[in-house]
Length: 385
Ligand SMILES: [Zn+2]
Ligand SMILES: [Zn+2]
Ligand SMILES: [Zn+2]
Ligand SMILES: [Zn+2]
Image (tube, rainbow, N blue to C red; front, top):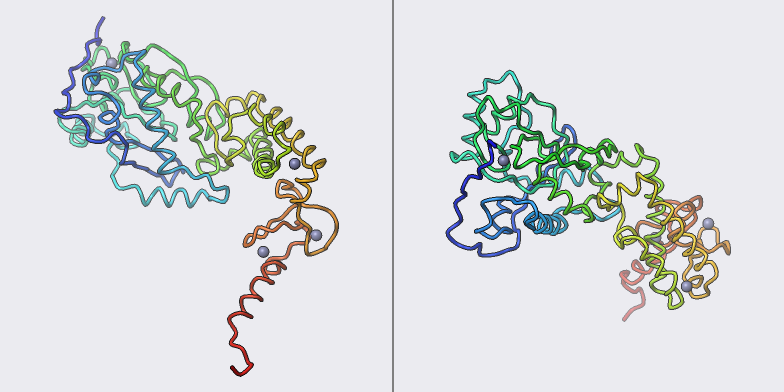
């Protein structure tokens, strides 16, 4: 077989001084609103030096890598606040974008190949090859001619660095996740759904990926690292299933908080364990596995069941009822709870609940009382001391 040899990789002369990923880069692309996240030198941090010469199938390097990736992702970038706007996410990611793109995002086929190679080798260093970066890719790769991509790869397999003779270029295999070509040792025609295609087009079709990507994607599959509100809000309008899940999720989020304060709610809280806890403790946050289940219609019925048990508990529980709000605008006896997202409006300042129809901005009775008290205490007394 040709193209099988793995290039030796120089081991670093010393062990990394720390194992935590401390550098984290966000690239944002204002044109298509996708973001690429890279962990620079992650391989150095998470893979033992003696194992760096190959990415063997079955080795757990992808798993370890993915865990580091998820941890760093959560720590540095993840937005879990329901109020976060896409623009905020993008602008904050711009602030962290401290490094220039290393590889041109789109290679124009008209560009002279030799020039491209010069650019690439200048950018990537003279050694020409480094192992694929563990990264969560949020953009769909534009379709670029095979020759141009392989030239940009410096005529080597991206997975192992083996030089590719031009007569073998057509035998290289494309990885839809990384958008690069691989030799037959590094690419075994494994298939996977692609996060970017799911998140931008609600496309769950399987595409060919290299062995490295297959391991990486399998490893992150269960991790809740995709904040749909941040990455692509339009998914909620594009997919009815997603929108219904979002509604149920918001109600369950508030219900769980309420139930946790009730000593009679133990059994109903048990029902929440049918789904991963992030689904009822965070808003907009999903794993790839969640998204697949939503698409298949497997998740919503579960959420609806939990919702039903929870609301019937609250309706019949004295302790929970005691925590309901009376709308101070209309003073009706109708109790309000934050989970009643269809009829309840919370004051953005003091979080008190009111009927949506009754609430007037700037007129919240509780906020007015608070500010009146403050004014009173700050006004100097007119009574002579
Ligand atoms: Zn290879
Ligand atoms: Zn209760
Ligand atoms: Zn009211
Ligand atoms: Zn208020």
